[in-house]
Length: 103
Image (cartoon, rainbow, N blue to C red; front, side, top):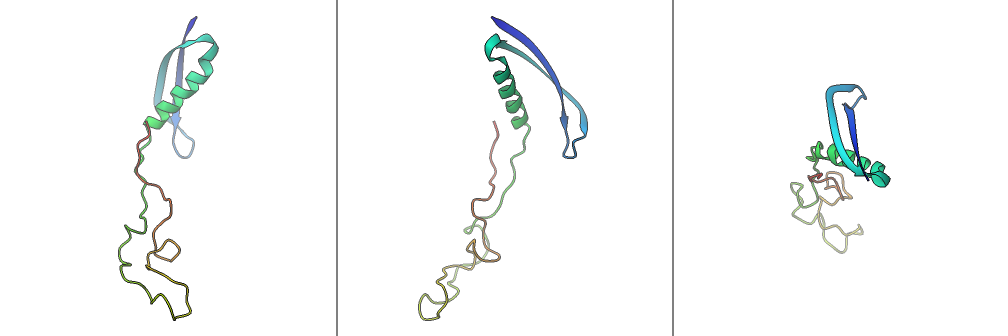
């Protein structure tokens, strides 16, 4: 048996204040799987509103760092191939956010 459900909800801003826009969803769901499908559709709708433009630079995208900082052997220091390694100050970011789409 199919059940028709109507849901209205308001979106919130970062501070938790209710915005003026109101969303209305009309769902036709099976009676025994309704709550899961409603939750999934709400997540789909909220994810479609996300911007997804956050970005950081990796070690290959940071400017500079083309020359070895010091030679490989004989200095007594740990070996280093670039001054833009993620371990160094001013280096790239390991596994940072990249732009993506939220469908």
